[in-house]
Image (cartoon, rainbow, N blue to C red; front, side):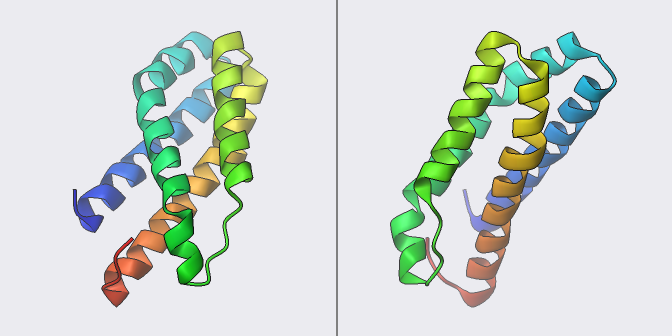
Length: 117
């Protein structure tokens, strides 16, 4: 998958995360849980990919603490397993969403500068 396709895919996931967050806020928890169950593997995949890129990003003077990304993913999985909708909403909206958006920004810059991750 090239940068453009990956960016588009992550942006679509971010929109879906926003929808899940809004469902939780509207107390439509089961709808949110079902929607999250459909994309949880993809979220974990992109977060893992982001963590795997950290050594390369350090070469470009971009310092990302891997333990923060790992903690975000663990929080999301814990919230999902326990059906803790407050933790799920907070983790999705304030952590995962921001990390994925930052990853997209990095990829956009790499694409613009013709750099490989």
